[in-house]
Length: 389
Ligand code: LRH
Ligand code: MN
Figure (tube, rainbow, N blue to C red):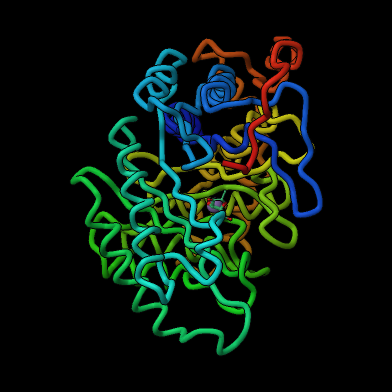
């Protein structure tokens, strides 16, 4: 690792930011059980206080994405001011089309225009929240789909979807973006209406420049080469954001990099290769659920995992890689990546944090702070936040 490469890596890492999901600080689980934990946030204000703890120790998580209606408050300007007082800001606003009985057979794709209008109106509410909080990203995951072949006309649903998305897109202000998220299965099991990056991209290109694709790392069929999709979306300038997490089988929403750190490295390698880490309009967000582990430490570990994968990707010797690729030296080319991946970047990240006046190890520093014990003691009474509105 040349000193120059190291210096350039440090400079890029210093400006890297990762956006945290408010819902990671609430209780979550599976259809089998949602576990409570001591000290869990009870409202959006406490969720933002928890996110601010992650930023305080990592220095790399200055934004919190909200989910509507899970994070509904009477005064969103007050919530944004609360965030600012804590040194963070409001990021993407997530709509929710997956918890309403009216959407059983679809929302933006529903055969009944009245139901589609209701789903479109929900996005008008989300855009109002964006205006009140200074957020510029409207994130739309479409949960719509069918469970049985023939249940509905697949093409008819796409036509209705295209029309509904046009109406949502028309709600945006000039500086706003629509982030369109795809998912290959769940909550429907025969066909999702936006099952893959291609379908999301087609709709985004039909809508306009303000529409880009969200790539959730848990939303692909097993064995999918996700970094290829990253490369292709960057190539056409339509990668708007990541929802980072990791999985073994389904949409497990586990800590990013915990299941397959080499995959996360390969993804960040495509980002660095395309010079898209900073200033390319890619919002690096987490979308995770800490079903059994404490939330704040879980988010701190997640931010550290993304930083480590990014640092390794920044240490790839790109001249040597390009030369090996040009000369067809397969093993040397692969080696350029695996050498970087095998590099222990923790000392580099420790140096970065100390240069920012932070503790070298955010996870250990938070554990020493006693904050987790304090919120467990103080947050008694009330209802712990979760996936319920
Ligand atoms: C859907 C999803 C989406 C969010 C939800 C919390 O699986 O990834 O991004 O709305 O999780
Ligand atoms: Mn997601």
